Length: 257
Image (cartoon, rainbow, N blue to C red):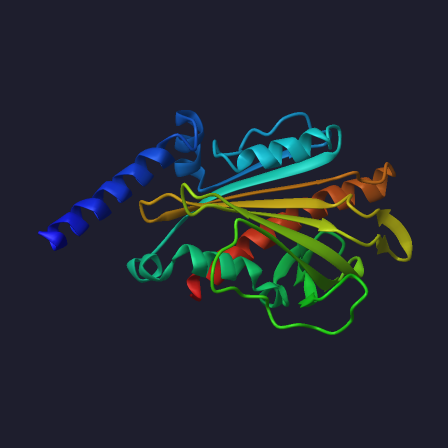
């Protein structure tokens, strides 16, 4: 009798989760995503988010982007299909720690507008204790998922050199979705010229397992790009390619679980 009850409870939980995820995307957006697999939305001057899933954590993104109205913004949305083996391994804890494994960002590739080819994005990536620390820490993995947490990391990329970023993590109790907001703590420079002041380069990733064998990945990057015609267009394209690279990092990390 107890075994039967457990089976019924699990089926009820899965059914509830599936129904909860049905409203994540509008019918038209879901159909377009099924057709194209990856959706991109670029705005020279941000006014609204067109690819953002309908989820409780999405309100944090809306609130942040509302303060960045008029900045350059790019969105990406994709649905990642999981194998049966991946589905079996992908608990919320595994997913959360995957997103905290910042060292695995080292070596990811992106399309460089300047060089016209694929190039390494981060030559190093590691967690640190504070913004002035230089000692690399092991990835700050956890045994229990907190409702909210943050970490600091140092990333050296091939465009802006070495910088400190803060990553804020949020979860809900209703499902396994995770939101990660990343913002620069130091000034990003290009050839010694200041490009992005602290808190200017903002990236958010919303990860939502749909309970039906897929994970929805939504990403958005917003920044106030320098109003220099040639430089501006290069950095705008760079924002798109960097966000696509993060999406690729997440998908590759899922496959390696």
